[in-house]
Image (cartoon, rainbow, N blue to C red; front, side, top):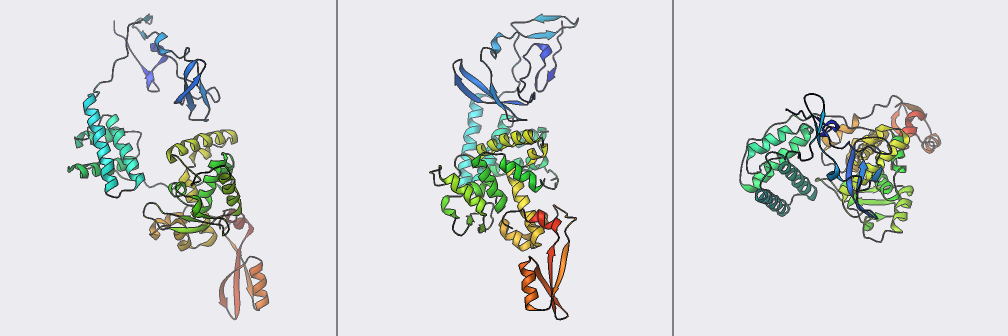
Length: 406
């Protein structure tokens, strides 16, 4: 008698006898991931993490014992049979253990080769992770056609991720002395997501002390997350209110002003952090904490847009606010540490302020000019023996004045 087996959410459906998917007790979502183990009176308990609301929970191992669950299949006449001896079929095409070890050894050699040739640490980590993922998904690193087919099968990857995978394998072949005809993927240009100023500030306030300080630094300096992560306490000058940024990705070093609010947050962090750096450990694990707290804040405020904010979003927000406050593209370029003005041009198109209008005043004497400057007006030009000054209207100034460091 033929049995029909269906699948749902990547697992066998409940109708074929496997247990139901876990449901988050907080938000009732089925997007539940494993999150390590926790020792308790029941023994070692599996911890679970909800990817929607960030809630963590665990269940009794006795309730989760899979060996006590029988398997059933749908038979042709609609009746159900208990097939206690039935086993889930093994995956087809699994690699031999020796071959897998050989791939791992080659990837380690590749990582050391990149380090000797001066590749950035982030580049090495990313390319090693991509090659390991390709091997796990069935690619043979010694067969370019196999790698090409594996990359093409990744429907969940966008073209940018596939392009990075091609670059990683091309670098691997450069080390191994091989060659291939790399596939071409058309890069789709997208406008970066830009939250409102209120949304960014609400997310900063919704996180814990260490994470809030980190996000405030990103917000005020516009630095990359890796640049902020490698800062040490000696890079800060609390008396002058500055921070010295060491560049990543071939950028330029720069010294930027920070607010008194951020200085107070850093001093509070320094009072209990005895390390040489304000932020230690793995940035990747820290980003995982950020995503969990971001989900909780978005759920608390009922604003799903907060889930789209990343570390790099604060860099876009800083650059956009700075440009629309000053209209000085060179200042934005120097603040972000760009070497090419082309990299900065994108920030001129992110926001179109409808209220971007000015009040114009004329000064014919030195006293009038001084009064206008004290009132917040800026000098524009001379015209018919008079000096022209301008100031943004209240609608525009309220938005731009909220950007720290501007």
